[in-house]
Amino acid sequence: MATLPQRFDPEQCQAVTREVLAAHRGEPGALLPILHDIQDRLGAVPPELLPLIAEDLCLSRAEVHGVVSFYHDFRASPPGRQHLKLCQAEACQSMGAKALTAALQEKLGLQLGETRADGSLTLEAVYCLGNCACAPNAMLGGELHGRVDLEGLLELLSEQEAHP
Ligand code: FES
Picture 1 (cartoon, rainbow, N blue to C red):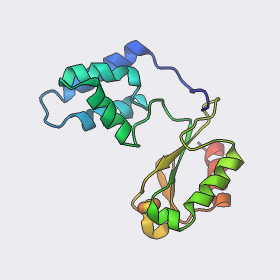
Picture 2: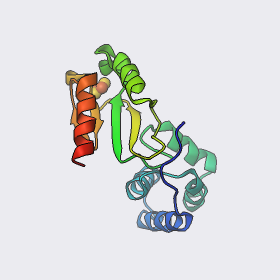
Picture 3: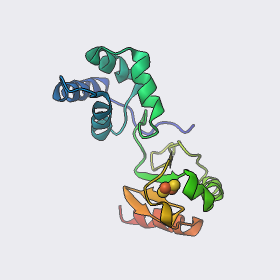
């Protein structure tokens, strides 16, 4: 696994988490919205914050950890400056996503779930982007791209790098 690009400031993370927890106080089923809000604000849900969340919601750490690890959306560290998500679900698999992923990993020297040591790029697996008819799909910087191939993805990456 590549080195993490950024380090969290623990005090700032705790302060953000306390604000998020306060904003959802008393809300039924608040765990998922809380985790999403924390990730929106910090770029990730650092594992160090799970005890604070568990304590506030009167849940066990194992329960919170179980939810965080069940959903692929939650990251333990912030993504790189470029963030490419490749769909690995069934419709995209049937249209060659597996081979495309392998070729891209080889070309970039990066595996799914990894971030480059310089923080320039994160490659991530996602499971359905809701655009199955145009498989295989990818998302770069929040923008959906259908019927992608290796050349197209490399072009998208260099275009975005040139015009961030
Ligand atoms: S399976 Fe890839 S977009 Fe739905």
